[in-house]
Image (tube, each protein chain N blue to C red):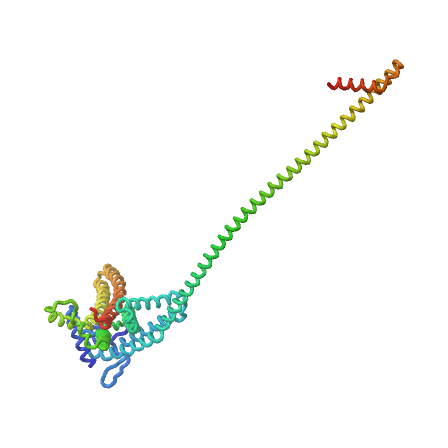
Length: 257
Length: 190
């Protein structure tokens, strides 16, 4: 995406330039700035890509799937198995949400690997909003299902009575840190990876301008290796976010932990 | 509300990222004024995706998987049935084969016995016929021999008579002549 160079001066050329949010269409509603930005554009592109890939893959609904359909079905099975393994059959109700969450993060991460694109998952506002929805949703589900007994989640079973005053605050803190750790993990991974790529890219340019151009290929080779690594991280972080959401859901549905 | 929330998470992010340089270099992630727009478009696009996934994609995938499972189940049942049928047919065939083989053996044995019996009967019949013929022939030969002998005696007697008559002009008594010829024949025969 074209970025707003003039507004940020020198910083615009630094490794953080790629995270700059640029307003494409200003929208102000009730004092809130809800402008359509590059972040929003890439969210739309991700949704459109997913719709095309998954709608297109299933357009024939063949008994014997082609490669495209098989890819869609494998993704479905992958998330379905993840939910089944971590939550069990009662998690099936939440499958559409977990599936959407996984795809939204996965495609955000992967599309972010396209040069000059924008990675909406590298922004804490987005990752925290998703983590907060998971956290609030899971807590509401747990309370609705178990009522007050849900609070027994904070009292680990099999702990000596003496340790309970110590364990309960720890459990409560760890419970409320969940959305923070969940969102920070994704945001920090995406941001660190993209920053690193940019730093190595900038380093190659620096070597060239310093008359050490023969060293530049080393930097470029590192970028290639890092790009592969980042693609892996993109998939893994989407998986981790979805798996942890499943585990939290499992905690709320089943209090035996 | 969204703003407080954003500040809270921004602080948390800044605290947990070790590179202090990021924080002082005006991190785009910490620009609180962009949070409302990000969260708003997140909600819009995520909801749209949720609707597409839950209303269109997932039902299609489920239908397909179910259809495949049904198809595989039906095919497997059919295959099972066909296999059982094939096994039964194989059993029937081998039974029929064994029966046919037994029949064949029996028929062969019977035919063999019949042929042998016929052969024996025919041999016996031929043997008997031959024996008969031999006995008859022997009888005929004997009769012929007797007749020939008698004829020879008569001829000899006639010869003796004519010789005697011619040479001696003596009339020989018929009874004495035949007795003498018969005696000579007997003596010659011994």
